[in-house]
Length: 115
Length: 115
Image (cartoon, rainbow over the protein chains, first blue to last red):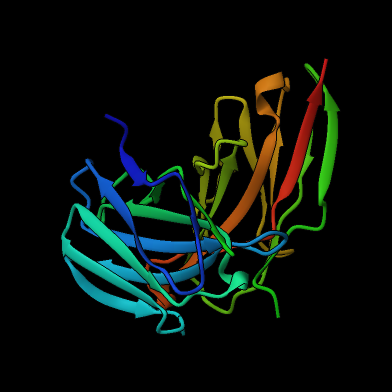
């Protein structure tokens, strides 16, 4: 089992749909992150969770709603999205104070297209 | 102002040659860390190398080395003996101690290795 998994890998949705992205990590980490990667833009931090508590919300519109039920799972609930929300959504995790370099481990991402 | 600047949108190199990917950063924090990640077409971000702001030696990890010039605020990635599998996007990122655990990414450089 790879360290950080994300499902689905690809998602196409209409602007009125409600969908959820799922991230799961099997590394025993206690910090999890959502990033958005749009074309020709740097990765943008969206949310940070530490020990299941949200510690950062980087001015993300309310149509994105994160949920972290436990340290291993992170969801991103989507509703009434706009076409400009089409992007690659990356999940990452990190061990607090852990890892050789305290690095983040990323999942493969969900490629989201909003029609 | 951009915190992480990668000025090379694309780089081309032949197999077995060395290549340098540029990265400059901007921070007023004394304690920070610099990371390089590789993103193949599959989407997953793969951690390559880390340099701490207090590290006196340049970081090395196998064929990767980081040319850290603190006064110039640059952290260039050097890949020696390029391989076809090195073709990917490369991202420079920074974590500032005062700004929490999230990473700030540059726009990335696309590296193409030819035979």
